Length: 109
Image (cartoon, rainbow, N blue to C red):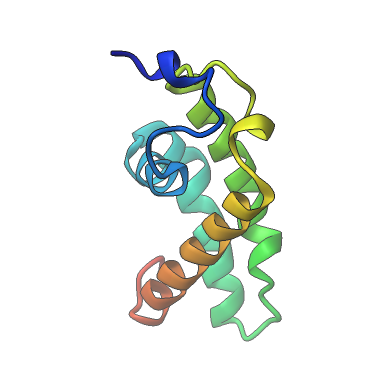
C-alpha cells in the first residue's frame, strides 16, 4: 500500500507532525540547506543576547519543510491541505523547545 492511497481520507493514518520532524532532521539535503542554517542563526542570535524570536528564524524553514515533505512523499495534496495551522504551530513549538535545549548545551556553534 502506498502513502498516496490514503489521500482521499480526511486524515493521514499517522502523525504528520512527527513524520515531518523526522523528515526535516534526517533528509540530508533539507537538513543542510534549511534546517541547520536556520537553527544556527537562532543560536547565534541567542548567544549574542539579542531578542531571538524563534518565529523569525524557524517559520520559513518549517514552511519549506512542509512543502518538501508533501513533494518528496507524494502525498498528492499541497502542504496547505495536509498541514493545519495547529500542525505548523506544533512543529514550531517542538523544534524551538528541542533546539533551544541543544543550543544551551553548546550545539550549533
